[in-house]
Length: 263
Image 1 (cartoon, rainbow, N blue to C red):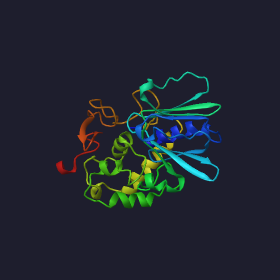
Image 2: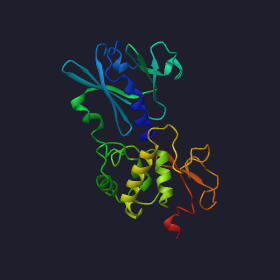
Image 3: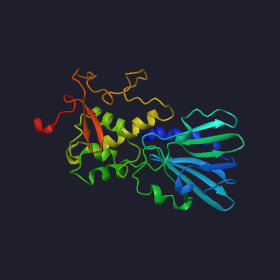
Image 4: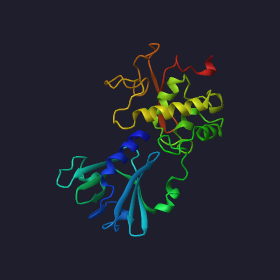
């Protein structure tokens, strides 16, 4: 699933639409089959956590087009007469045309229009945004600690605690702090440190499509544990492990992130 920095980058791709009027639109999902925003002007492209918010205006009316990338979604922007290369046509869910650009959404999810004043209906449940102006480490820490019995990996992935962490950052944050993924939040050490590290990592990677937690952008060197099952830990040489956790998988080093129950 795209992490918060990927969604932030996607919002920046859509920035080229800002100030332009939509001359044609098409939505290939049943709930928006009759929707038409021709004549509306794109005010700005924004995001919150993993949610994309394209804000439109038409006179004194303001409306937001909401989309979510989930596992496989993407937005591509092409010049007016440029060939589309984002994927097969049957994957297209939304098309927005201006005089200069065409924005094409592939495999998008949760498509809906809401009044801009009602954006909280779709993103109000989220915790502090790791890449947003509202980032509040103290509030994120409070939310992580609110369910002390919950496994820390699951707590970090819960967008209601802090918005933007995906499976990659979850695994890397816990490795860097030496925390076993199944540790209850109450026993996971300094939760503020986890929140601060998440904020640092996502902000370091925003603005580029290659994500790195190691400092290297070379292939095969960008992560410590994520996607490295069976390969040697960069710190101790122990084979990295992978296992199911909840509805996702997790990666960890059994030596650098020991199970406290076995000690």
